[in-house]
Length: 508
Image (cartoon, rainbow, N blue to C red; front, side, top):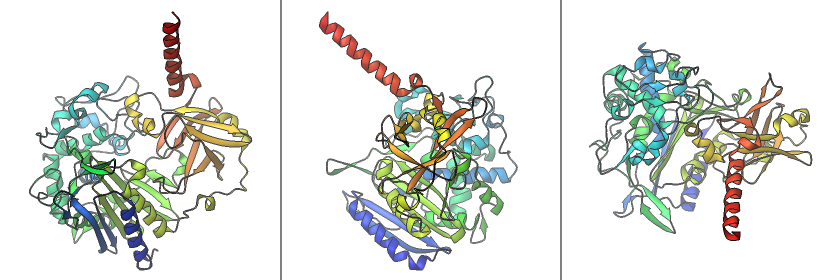
C-alpha cells in the first residue's frame, strides 16, 4: 500500500517546481485519498487580461478526458442489455443513419473495436474533410454548434480492417456517444447531465457553455516568442470525444466514483463488475506488454512497480489535462492547465510523471531498470533488423506519422538500435535486451514526458514465413516492410527527382 501522508509534501513541492518552470498562465491540481480531497493547489490566472486567479471552482476544458464519461454512459446501456460488446455497431444504426463502411472481406466493426481504438476508423471521416471548416468536427466559439447527428448521419468509412491496428480515433469514439443518444432517446449532452453529472453532484460541469459553467471558465492560451496570446476556442461537434468543461472539485467526485467501483454516496452509476471489465487488458501492441501496460475500454492502464495506474490525458486548443487513478490504493489526482503545449512538454504530464514515480517508487534512472548482463538472443537479429511502418490506411496512421513516420532497426558493432525518420527517435536509441527474447527497451530522457524510464519495443513473429511481421512501440503496431515501401524512400525519391529536374533545367 502507498502511504500518501509520507509523500504529500513531496507532491506539493513537485507541483510548485513544475509550475515555476512552466509558462502556464494557470494550473489546478486535486489530490484524492481514501475518498477525500487531501489537497488542492491552484496557481496563476484563469484569465490573464482580467487577472482572475485560478481556484478550485475554475472551469477548464478537459479535452479527451471526455471519453471516460462517454465510456461510462455506454456501459450503462450495456448493463441494461441494450447491446453486446462484440455486436456489429451497424446493427444499432438505423438505415437512414450513416453506417460504418467496411471493404469486402473485412470484419464488421464492433463496440469492443471502438472502445479500444481498433476499429480502423481514422482521425477524419474522409481525407477531403481536411479542407472543410473545422475538419467537419469542430466549430469556432462564436458559431452555432451543429448537432451530433449532423456528422453521424453520414457514412463513416474504415481505412483498415477492424482489429488490425491501434488507431486513436476521435470520430470513432464520438460514434459511441451518438449510439448512447439512439439507445437512450436523450441527446448526448442531456444524458451525461442527467445520468452522470447530476447524480454525482457535478453541478459545475457540462458539455456545452451553459449557465452551469459560465462565469467560472478559464481562458486558453498559447505561448509564442515570450508572450501569451489567446488560443482560438473551438467547440466540439463530436462532443463525446472532447467537449468536457469541469473543475477540480467536480472531477474529484468522478474519480471517487470510479475508485469506489461505480458508486458514490449510495448513488450507483455502474456495477462493480462493469468497472472492472472496463479496466481489463483488452488490447496491447505486444502480448508480452500486458504485464506492463495495456488498454482497457478507453482507459490507458499501467503496472508500475506492482501498482495499477488507470488514466486518460486530454488536450484541446489552449488547455491540457490529466486524470489518473490508483484504484487499489484509493488514490487519484486531477491536473489541468490553460496553456496549449506539445505532448512531451505539457506541464500536466510532467507533474503526472513525477507524481507516479514518487507514489509507486519506480526508478527514475533507466540504468536501474536495464540489466547490462543480459545476453540478447542474436539468432533473432536477422529477422528483427529492417524497416517498419504503418499498415495501409493513411487516415488511421496519423499517430504513427506524429511519432516518426517510419522506423528502422539496425545492428552496428554487435549492438541493436532503433531510429525514426524524424521526431524524438531521429537520433537512434540503443535497444537493450529483456528476459523476453523478442522484447527490447530503450532509455527515455528524464524530460521526455514518458511515465517509465525505459520504453519497451516488442517484435512479433510471422510463423508462416519464419520472419518478424510487426513491431510494437507504446500502443502502436507497425508492419515490417521493404525499404522501397517506406516513407523515407518515397521522400528521398522525390527530393532526388526534384534535384535532377532543377539541374536539367539549368544545363539545358
